[in-house]
Every structure is written in structure tokens, then in C-alpha cells.
Length: 417
Image: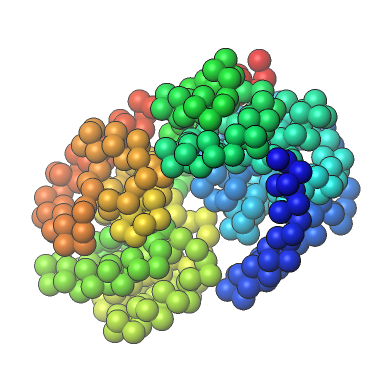
């Protein structure tokens, strides 16, 4: 089955390259460093590395505390991080810089994987969340490289998909040394698709170990006073196509009740920054962008965060936060960052990628779920008029995060015991 899978992958390479090129028209970074995806490198790298693979921004942010812990306790270890997306790559380089090596994950083809492993000779391979690659995992087993799947999660839908291809999935799972899942439900699902029970352990979700530097909070306070001039700031973070137009309409309605309201907007994908700016102008809203370095005036309606890596900072400026990808069928985004920063959280019904976290944070009265934009508007007005409710939500959210921390330490022990 793996040979047939490889044949299909080889056959699809022209389409894959075409898709990269097409995506590069919106984000030029997709056409850069393509050779890395085929295991060709322009320089020699350190070998015998601890290798982490984090698909994109979310996975990278989750694993940063673990990498910092390793660097603190074992400073001589060389660390390699691979990502799949340019935004993930940019985040790794911005946060960790030259303290780690970074390249794109190679395509899951036998010769490509062989070049990658020869170049870096990883002594441990660590895959973050759920990435199962048949040839890569086979090569790790063949080369006696311990392979770990950490912070692993698996939905019921994914279970049904993997169960349809057992001859491909079973050998891949057998190559894994240990699977550390986020929850007991994830543990059960991995066993359902063929993982050996003794190789699967629930160690918790490392995303709870989010760290908020004190400087972030103080800088946020300064920015609120300087750039936003103490306006009532509602931040909409990680938004997707279809959500911004809803938020613009909601903003217009809310301004009747909250004259000093300002909408801070952080689209999920940087290639959409210009599109969202044009949407705001089309909606007759006055917009200021972060990169313009302009201050917001009283008549400013929207502040567009058209930068990467500053979301925590702007959460710290906000009075309320809406986490996007939840009013459209994307599956939601991480609500733990705003919880840790200390801003009241609202989100929509589409939270399948964070279903258990969403369920628990709602149970703890630490966030509000809005079934539609009208509910969002009413809740914003309610929280504006009753600051004590905002304070209660923030307090509950911080407690919720604190009570679920510790996975990073447990995973460190798993890797280095």
C-alpha cells in the first residue's frame, strides 16, 4: 500500500508545485525555498538534532515553551524545527531566531525523506499534534530514530477516514515510539485506528502552558493609551473570509450604543490583509493599519493588525475579544491565549478543532459562545455596561488555564527520561 501511496504522491507533484505557485500570487513566500521541500539544502546543517515538526503558527506557538525548556536544561542540544507554511516559518524565525535550525518539512516521498534524514541525522523525531506520514515514519523506523507524536489529537471524522486505509495507517503507527495525547478521548481514538494501547498516553494539552511575558501586558497598556486613546477596544482575532463583513455590520450597530467603540481586526492569513482593508473601505469604515504607524483618531472605526506575531500584545490592549474561525465552518482557533492574557472571550458555534476546550471553558463560565452575530452584539453591549461581568469572565478564564497546565513538563520527561 505504501508503494501505491508513493506512486500517487509522485504523480501529484506537478499539481502540488502548481498549487504552491498559485498560492504565491497572494503570498510570495510560497515560492521561496521550494528546494527544501524536496530535501535539497543550500548549506550544511548541524546533525544529531532533536527534530520537531510543527505544521503552522498554532502548532509552533504550542511547542515553543517545550523548546525553551529543552534549551534551558540542555543548552548543548541542537534543535531543528520544520514547518509546512510560510507563516509558521516566519513565526519560528521571529521567536527562536538562530537558536534553532529551521527548514520546511520535506514531501513524504522515499528519496526526499532519505535526503532530509541524511542531512540532519535526527536522534529524536517529534511530531506536534496529528501528522501521519507513511514514508517519513517508515524511514524513521528503518533508521532506528525514536519517533514521538505529542499533543496529539484525533477527531471522530479523522478516525473514520484512517479506518478506511488500515494497510497504510497500521505500519505508520507501529513506527511511533510513543503517542502523547491531549485528552483521554484522543487516546481512545488513536487506539481505535490501530495504535498499541501501551504506546498511547494522555499527558494533557501543551497549549495550556502558554506564557505571557509581563512586558506584553505593560506594552499593551501603553498602546491602548497611545494608539487607541483609551477607546473601548473589541478585538476580532484570527478571522476568516465571511467573518469580517459580519463584524463590520455588527460594529455599525454597536456604535449606536458604544460611541467610543473601536474594532481591532487580525485576519488569520497575511495574504488577506489587503482584501480586508478594502472590505472595510467598501463598508465606509475609516481604517488605520498597524504597519502605517498612524494613531487612531476619534473617527477611526477599524484598526487592522496587518503584522504577524503581535496577537498577544493586542489582546492586552482589548476590552473584549472574539476568536475567529468560529462564525464560518473553519473549526475555531485557540482561546487559551486571550484567556491567559486576561481579556473576556467570545466565540461562535464552529469550534470542532477545539471542541473539548470550548466545552470546558464554557462550563467554567470563562467564555461566552454566540450562536450568531446578533447574540455577539447583545453580549458586547452587556459587557460594556457591566464591567464586573468582564472581570468575572477574566478571573474564571485565568483559573481555567492554570488548573490545566503541566503538559510541557510531562512531555519533556517523556522525551528525556
